[in-house]
Image 1: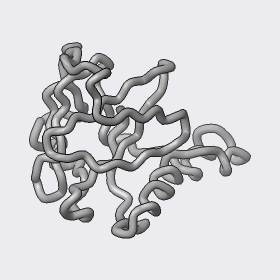
Image 2: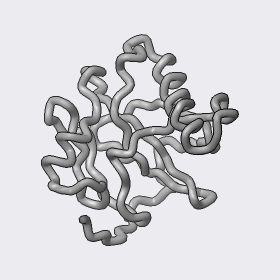
Image 3: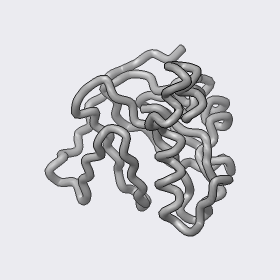
Image 4: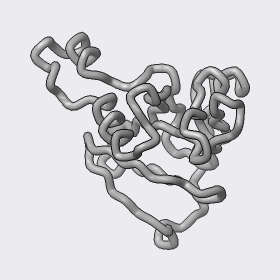
Length: 153
């Protein structure tokens, strides 16, 4: 079990190089360069951000929940957690967190899981897996086979 320490980012939002507001249910795909920071803000409260991480040099080298959990000896992610790729290489590090622990094994909702959770008539309901597929389809280097483990922030 991790102990949560709320750590506020010292970075100023007005100095951001890029800002994107993503409405609930929408997706976003963007390359981060070394040294850049990704800040996720839950503007309306009670939201979750399902994320996928890939190496920009090698799209097959994606986030590995197994390597990350094994290295840190903890199921949950929070300030200080390093997210590792399948190769064992560091993809990113959580440097600030005001929310608490984040899930890395629960996976993303899908059309099928929504029918189990809610009802069979919810099959066409929005789901994160479909959003992931839509975002990946915008890049030539990704196919359905590249759908990787996700992190729920």
